Image 1 (cartoon, rainbow, N blue to C red):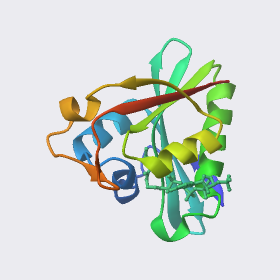
Image 2: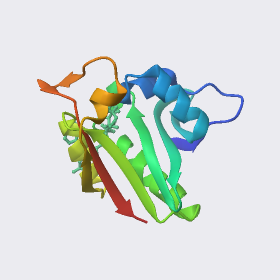
Image 3: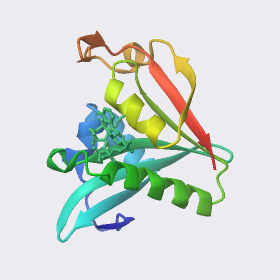
Image 4: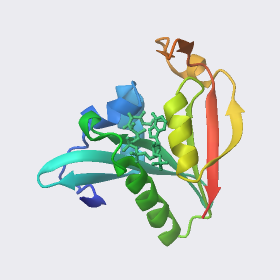
Length: 150
Ligand SMILES: CC(C)(COP(=O)(O)OP(=O)(O)OC[C@H]1O[C@@H](n2cnc3c(N)ncnc32)[C@H](O)[C@@H]1OP(=O)(O)O)[C@@H](O)C(=O)NCCC(=O)NCCS
């Protein structure tokens, strides 16, 4: 598997990005402002992540996604580890990520990638998304913030 930055002349893999974030508008906006990295096996794009600088010395992993039939093989973790290495090499001191209160699997995944919960942004998804989101029978309302020192 090869992980590399998306070239200027390449389209971002929108189908993959939308697996992690249902809002095409939000995805387009942060892909333009941030840096998009893709994972390829041969000619197939099987993973993506996006890094977005947010505050001095802090970068946020705003999207990470793996093609569904490749889940559970360690690819997501390799993408996050790659994002951490890239962020470190650029001199950032902290990497952050956020996920919904209803995203139980993602909360497990990020903690297994070394993130610690640092806060909760109450009603984040109610404020930012027009559609109601439900996962595991739980309404997605709050953004759970996680971070790790680099
Ligand atoms: C979240 C996602 C990127 C994980 O990718 P993946 O390649 O399946 O994850 P990995 O195989 O690298 O898993 C790494 C670790 O996290 C754990 N993990 C991954 N998904 C999990 C889940 N849904 N529930 C519990 N644990 C999970 C794995 O068991 C593994 O644990 P280990 O290190 O002890 O073996 C992938 O499920 C995905 O693309 N989901 C859709 C998009 C999305 O929701 N992105 C996150 C937005 S907040």
